[in-house]
Image (cartoon, rainbow, N blue to C red; front, side):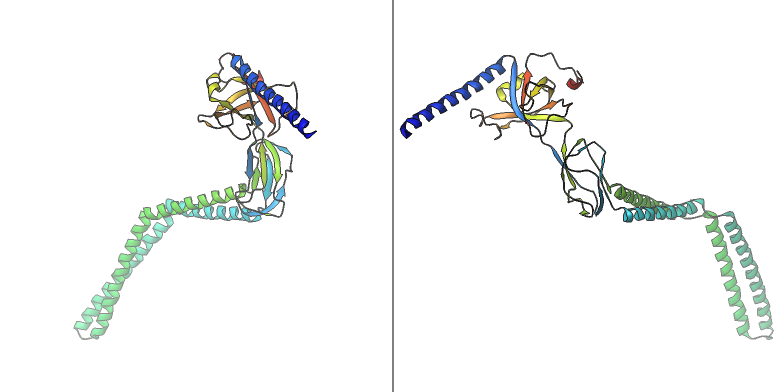
Length: 343
């Protein structure tokens, strides 16, 4: 019985191999005429979403399997500390702004008048001290007072004269106003405060996590109460817009296609249904046939990666789904801006 079964198995395998060879040959014969048939999968593209900050998670608004849209709020962090920091930086910036305003305004008229009055007081004191010295000097020469008293009067007159000159310089400073270096330093400090405020605002904004594109929440990794950080993703988002099929074309067929050409995509999940599509990307470099292409004849040949964008209005195409791409080779030139999904 075993001897009879073995030849039967070999014969059956030979017929199967012959059938596969015939299918592959026929497929390429069809491609050589008016269409090119390629096989691939709906591309799986994932984004790891994480907060750009370290804080405890307050809310997780999306669940696994939920479809989300671009800019939709997905999660938030506890913002108490971040909000207080924004207020602190805003107050410091406001205080520094007042410093800049004061320096730019210069001396007030009242301050200048005060300095002028102080100069006048110092002048009067200096004149009085000089007259006192002259009297003391005469009395000393007549031996009515000691020389020490004259020296004390001379010192008082010199000190009064110095105070007078100091008051004059103070008046000049009041009239000139703040130094330009002080004004520039104050303005620089204000810019630093403003930058710190923007950083605090950005940190507060980063406490809200938004969807970067349309997609489906594939995995919810963290939960409220967990400590978030830029190194720990919160969600895994599967991108669904745009949808494309990743396939490969051989070098001998490369000259038959170009980006923008219309195509059709079909799947085993929806027999007889064809989806409008177009070639969106054609790799500029060759690569060895990936392992997912199981045909033994082309397994070791060089191929070019192809992205065929697909219209998916009913949301029937799923990421990773096997798909067949049919590209009519006899079609009019592609019009720039043409959208197959709207035609």
